[in-house]
Length: 130
Image 1 (cartoon, one colour):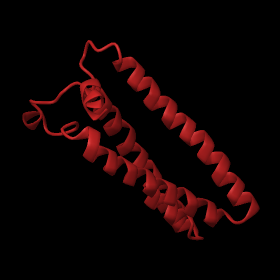
Image 2 (cartoon, one colour; image 1 turned 60 degrees about the vertical axis):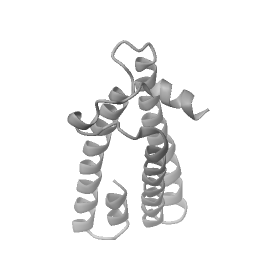
Image 3 (cartoon, helix red, strand yellow; image 1 turned 90 degrees about the vertical axis):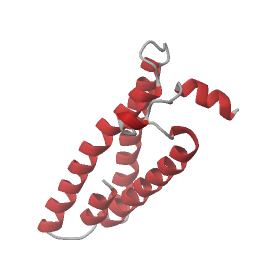
Image 4 (cartoon, one colour; image 1 turned 60 degrees about the horizontal axis):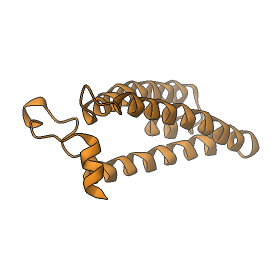
């Protein structure tokens, strides 16, 4: 999605379609994969499971809302290319935070099923960090 935003910053019809295509593909890869990782973070009967999904979807929707306001304001006041560049940079920072967070709290989640036999409940992992 970040690459799609960087491509949208370039003027031209071809770049418009390529950038939108990149955003579509990125969104299609982000949400289902992230939702499946969240599903693995909680045991099936964990009372926190629904709350985890709720927090995830609130975060996605709140981020989309605030980003559209911020990027729209930058686009209107300065230039649209700067708005798309800002969005791309924010997405790159978000993936960096995800990678760093994965190292500390998400190791083992999202792995192939044959390699994930010794996973703990996500709440147990968080308790171990404190």
